[in-house]
Length: 598
Image (tube, rainbow, N blue to C red):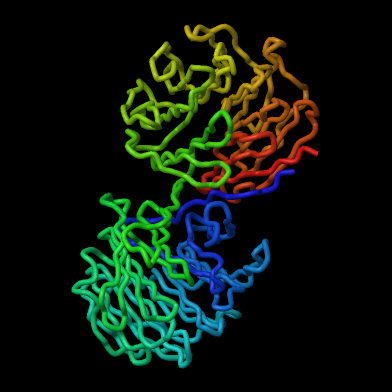
């Protein structure tokens, strides 16, 4: 049985020049953000390993927010649909789904009685709607804008008021229900990115691309003045009021977050996040005692309001699909790479991480290999380098790399048109020409290198090291070889294929089949393989989103986890100890599974 133990969750999806929205739990326990088709419900107390993921949207999600009661979450996606679903059960039962806009949803807001929603974003004829949460029936018109609406918020108390902010440079004010257009505020001179009511309802603040923060009276929308002159040197993407409404946090593209006194409009403190583009701040959240900002690279920054300057905690990771995974010999450290060339080193127990900086890669990290000394080798899909993680110096390759494998003091790199064998700390031992390679695996003693190719009729080739001379071929297959892995005891070679099959070859039997059972229970191509430390079980991950653990001693027995990464193919697997399997997916998540073999 595979039981999910913890998730090293994906970071929020970000885009330069666009704000993202974080949602806070009214109980102060969790916060929300989106990436891909998923909504992430992440713990505020233990954000490193405690996370729940909702994956029922069919298109990319744009925003998610709790209802004021905390019993429901409303989430909107790129197709213009909003889904309202339960938070109290693990299944997250769907309450309602409504198709409300003709384009992507950017923000939404609940009334304090949990009965109404205003949903805004892109569209054809309209850019916002006001509906009942139970039926989807209209409760007013959201008009007054000529371009996409970026942000919306409700006055928390009755009489209800609503405000919207748009790319047409204006803020619109509504009274209701039913909600009717009342007033247009045009003090902004560029995109208005965010508008937020203070919890007291006495005022609301709006901010945009000019770096200005404007305050308005909460019941009438009367202009009250400006905070700062301007508040930031770059565009402001998010605002968050303190629970007692006396302070306001703003974040900006100028790579700072600033805390303001609302009463006298003075600056209380400032946090600076660095000097790179990735340090631009695109969102913030104030949830009870927790204050969080989001950097352009997706990093979550936890702030201590009593100590301005630098964040007290930074949670990093991946926001793009993970394409490479390996571990240290003791399993305490994981190394992952992704499509945006990010390389991250994790503590497998705590989920704490550090991002490796200074690498020469500029494109997708295709494969990783950790040698016996703990040196990390990474290869990029652009053929730009095969590098050590602790050295940015690139080593050019003659063709695009596809896989890497390490054993003893050797590292093999399979490329489309050639093979490279390195000896730690990176000296080239041998290079040979090859054709259409897809994967490789070194035997535990480093004496044999197995390579597979895209040609369905070409056999798996076995090469001796260090000469890389062919010594044997394995011809028992009729599809592209997608993955290879030697068992830790060196007794067997496992292979995964594009036709769903998994085969195990016995080394002692001249690489004949180790069993006669057909392991073909995946419904799509096999992407990855991983042996347990005792060489008795083999885990496989597939394009079909499932993980299967096979028993070598009992070939008919298997443990299946369907939808292990829902709506996301499994990209890599590795075992960190006898009972814990790590999987990565196209959903940018790393999952740690407890495996029971009973």
